[in-house]
Length: 105
Image (tube, rainbow, N blue to C red):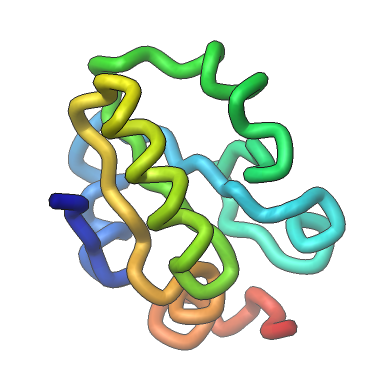
């Protein structure tokens, strides 16, 4: 089962421990809106980026609405990653609940 966090819960997680925020949207989306500190690893070529991740690190995965990130979480879990969390509602929910300066698109 994939763990989901709301943006508000994710903010607390990011403050508490060593968690990497991985954005799986495409480059053009990342240029429009991004969460500070996030790392772009587009879903379209995620296998290439997956090599830069360790199976034991904490990973919070974000996309636009939470669907692509959920798919990437499943992929990571299938590849023996242990600490994978989906950001529920994606960057749109983050903008609405945490940081309204992030544009909606």
